[in-house]
Length: 239
Image (tube, rainbow, N blue to C red; front, side, top):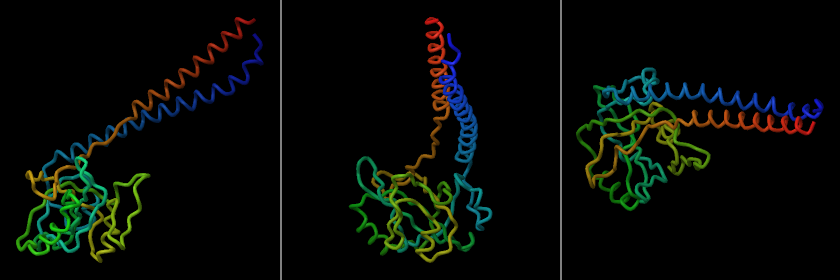
C-alpha cells in the first residue's frame, strides 16, 4: 500500500471529522443550555400570578412570568395583529392598551386580549366603542418582553397603517404616542364558549432538537471514518 495514496483522503477526512465532532459537542452544550431554559420557563409559568411592577426596571426580569393588572382598556387605540388563524378561520389578535388604576400607578401596558375572526371585527369595534368599561377590569396573563414572533417569512410591520405582523411594543408605543413598557401581557384566562376575543390559546413550549442534531453530526463523523477505513482496506488489499 502506497502511503502517498492516503495523503489526499486523509487531508480531507481528518479536518472534516474534527469539524463534525466539534459541531456535535457544540450541540450537546446547546442541549444543556436549552434544558436549563425550559426548566426556568416552566418554573415561571407554574408560579402564582403576581402584580405587574410599576417601574420599568422591575419589569425587565418578568418575561414569561404570570402577572395580573387592573385597569380600563383604551379600545380606541386597539391594534390588530394580522394573519392569526384558528381552526382554518382567518382572524387577528387584538392588542389593546390598558390604563392601570391609580392604585397600580396609572401606567399603561399593552394586552393581547386574544383572537377575533375577521368577519366580527366591524361589529366588535363598534360595540366596544359604545360600551367602554366604566369599571376597572382585572386581566391575568403571561408577560412577553420586547419585539417577537418574527421569522424569515414574517412581513415587515407597517406602523403608519397600523398593520402589525409581529408584536413590537416600542413601535406601537411610538405610533400611539404612549409611554409604555416594552412588553405585552398575553391574556391567558380561557374564554367561555362563544365569547370573543378568544384568549388562553397561547403555548410557551420551546423546541429542543439539539440532541437529534448532535447525533446527526456524530453519525456523519462515524460514517466518514467508516468510508475512510474501507478506502484504506481496499488499498491494502490491492497491495
